[in-house]
Image (cartoon, rainbow, N blue to C red; front, side, top):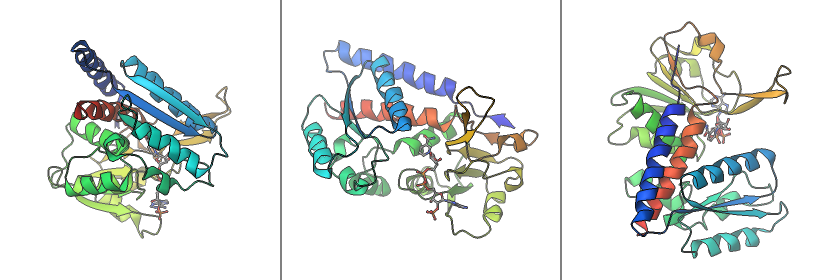
Length: 289
Ligand code: NAP
């Protein structure tokens, strides 16, 4: 097994974004602005938000953070988003998901103005992407495509299985990979799929976005397969001080002696998702002139 380590790749993206931001600001332009909205105080969400805002500041972006109470009403969240839509200092609006259960996530997301939708979640943005029009490529799919291109993994004419059909990972990723330029033959699996193993064993590339630890062991892969592990799962680990560790969907240890390429968790797709968000924010700033 060879690991497709994404630390260097994400660092090189940050280096060039930082340099480009500096050049952009030196020409007298306003720095890119990223607004992050969090509702409630979910621990994992707070950690993700901290990572994103710290990264934005390191790149020279201006970050705006908004914390709303977990019992906020839908109108309050929408009103904040609308004020950010009208705020000329803001190029990207990131609504940290998941939202508390009483809020309608889909309805709220649609209030983000499409030219500030750097996560690429709105229906209009996804529609534009499906048609190949100007859009923001959603961050996790974008990060995966960057991994494939950076490690020279061809997709044209290849058989790809995407496991999972969520709106933020599986569905947009499948659309992109089947599109012109990537030209892959894509199968998308869900929880009702029969004989998943037959699909993965006959695939050149397997991308797993299921969210179940150790879901895929070595028996699911043929030699030569490229495996992209999107899953982020916490499992108990008494040997760690905090009592848990993060693993992907793939049982990494079972693949140790196999001829496969695998993205690690942590250190793989997660790093690329944040890097892609920063890329999209810069793109938004440039587009807005
Ligand atoms: P999600 O909304 O939780 O959906 C999971 C998908 O897996 C569903 O489509 C589900 O099918 C499918 N599934 C469940 N059991 C299956 C089975 N036995 N066989 C085939 N498919 C099965 O997914 P998500 O939001 O995309 O997240 C997936 C994982 O990726 C999570 O661990 C999440 O934390 C992680 N993630 C990581 C990043 C990153 O940056 N690395 C970003 C986003 C998400 P049904 O539709 O039939 O239920």
